[in-house]
Image 1 (tube, rainbow, N blue to C red):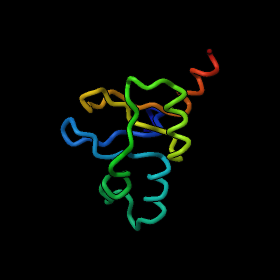
Image 2: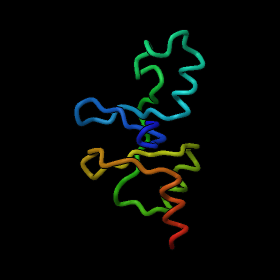
Image 3: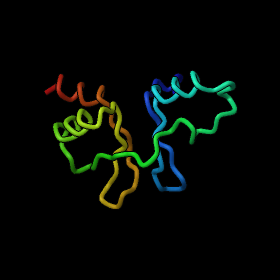
Length: 98
């Protein structure tokens, strides 16, 4: 995540989205673990993540993120397939360039 400058990663089981690993989650896991290297990703990944749809506009996604109190949302298509991840930073850039 550090090398790629990413704040969150999708956790998948095959093609199915099962969670999200965030910087915040990693910090909490490291603070709580005696040896964080041995902690499985499931211990610090959020499960049952909320998603954004590729059909949603930026304003709707921002509103949803604010209500949920999150900075990242996985983006899925109409079949529920993971397409990518959207961040508050991405959405701020869209607004700044509008």
